[in-house]
Length: 408
Ligand code: PMP
Image (tube, rainbow, N blue to C red; front, side):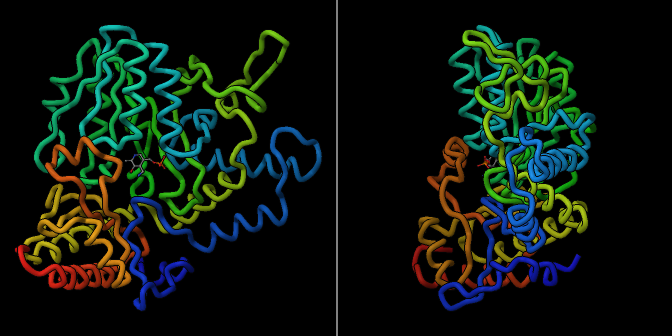
């Protein structure tokens, strides 16, 4: 894989920011979009746009084919057994909310447990808090190691026969840890619990096989994997989705409507009320083609190498604290520069053309666990190069000089 060549397919990266060539290191928040995805969106709107599942006219059936074709691509991409196991959503957040509001609320009772980890994104935390409040279930947390990793013995000790649901992230958006979700799924199933995997930070960066993981639900967002914003997916095992009630009602999701009663369509459409995100799905299909052509294994290898290089380069900067494991980290590095607020660090980096994220990264409990209010984070994707890491390191040295005393 040649990142410098691939980068040319991302027009947005070819610009100067504050007088410097842009170095975009915020792909964990959202990725940039390559020409094939931009062209697929343009072609869809220029030739095929119509509403789906309704019109008998030619554009209507072309749009339906494009939308349902994208679903087939997602199913193959995740190695789902059935295409109808793929529900299009707005993103990871909406997908998790659907499971928490529908599945969890129907199975959980007082005395039951929902098991999470303290490093979850708010999107995989608050929906479960709400489900617990509504059902009387208790939230339990698997303890984490100082580097953010999980020990299987802690997982074993936390999940019990009372556990109905385990929900955790595959890859942490702050620590960069990769959780052993396949083993955790086996432990959950041993106790009769179901498992939801938050795939927001894994799906864009590594090969995912939901059947091999044997997860019951899997959620991800298109915008972090070269697709447009506003499209994502929930994968769910067919036998579970079939038992779930919709949480959004209206057009598109109905079978028969009476004045006082209505019935729903079969899977997957019963969970897709209203006009769906048709162009978004087309863009997601194009993004999947693009990523598969490069190869998810190649992308993962490239990013792990960049993250290891970044860890090494940033470790050379005196006074810079790096969070997360020193080895086997996914493609991101989270750090703080002495006592300087990460917003100030990110502002100085931006003046050097280097875009990083600063804040709590939607992980307030994790920030408290790290005993910080916020951190800065550089995250990599297939278009980032070793030169980008060098620019980050050089800009951080400048930032350190700028803030002067008290660092290192
Ligand atoms: N989970 C994780 C681990 C994430 O990193 C994110 C996005 N930062 C989300 C969930 C939420 O994704 P979205 O905002 O696309 O719904």
